[in-house]
Image 1 (cartoon, helix red, strand yellow):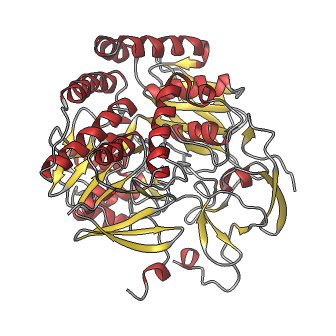
Image 2 (image 1 turned 135 degrees about the horizontal axis):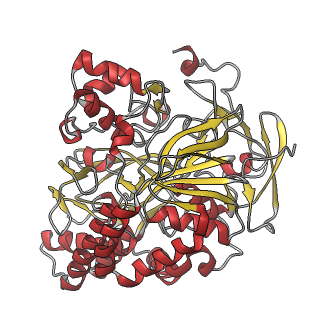
Length: 450
Length: 106
């Protein structure tokens, strides 16, 4: 009984694989990328002309270490790596995979999910147009392709990525017109204290980056709308902390408010969820070791949004839990668990410093496109509340919000706030969208004849 | 074709060129580009929206939102942000002739 499947080859998945190999196992690792590294340590398709220092900045050594560890595991045939492969469904201990080899199934005894996270996005009028992206997209475009998403960019949202992406773009020669942070300075200062106590150097580095943005950066803004023409964004209209109307001309907008855990596969694997008020989202339940269901383990940002350093620790911890449950000897986890606790304190303060602007969703005009996949307006979603009550899954059935290409990945948190606002109740009582297979679009032909 | 593209290249100008077709037009990109980069270096969008008047040009670039699936002339679709451009690819923003257009007729 030693068939272990690891989904995700970012920092968490790589360290989990390394830990299992050290114990004599040969895990199977599946990742959608061509090469290991995940989104944070994403690599280019062809060997880059840029150095690791240029690509990953202060995290270059960590990125190189994660890449080297995994490349060695693959070269030595200690893991079986299915790259560019998606997990389409999980059922009764069988993973349905789709990749370059076509559709294949894999029966596993134990499952480690290291599926990472995506940008958490708040809709605003005009966000459905071409040329509006996530902050993560802006960073990926720069890191893995060497391109900017436009010639004049406006970045908006909140959280550390907002400042980081702006700094990286400017350094690379991109033009950033404005950096618009919905977090007021007072919450930033309050949360910043806790951040500095947990990770003084990281906090200081962030503050210095921010200072480097100068007059481009604005705190405590309210985002009104993205003005578009036939090709895309023309300007982002916003209000400053004093409520004065401003507009920033642009041809591209990138939006993001921290991250949302990617939990689709955890849901299909039978993990249960709870509303987390600090992170303002539903997160899978697990113990400190990552045990989340029978023979299912979670590691990294897909379980707890603590960042890449924590993901490496969590990957080792989850793999160790897996080994212990198999009755195998496993190493001491105390240093990793201590590190995770410290990083959790930092992350919680970060969330307080740069909060999710829930009230922005509740105040969205009725004609705002809320679900950009299906083009459903906030008003259409509000109308379902009177018909079927304030419950996320019923609202989805009636309105199609969350039923499109992204399966609600990008709109469901805002949608839940819209429903809660309409019913004047806390968002945690609206419920969570149940995930359905397939987790990714798949041609019917891939699964015919089974 | 070399209209003004949506994306702007800031690095790695030296990669070798790749030629592909998008909506029948000969288009030039660079080896190592994703399909989305390849198309948006000289164009403004990937496809019409399923549900509104606007066009679409991707959103997350990390394979999560599924906004950027486009067609190949040979039939199967591909996700433009996670697929590498290959010399000679023939891509289209709309379904090839003969495919029932389910999205539009819904």
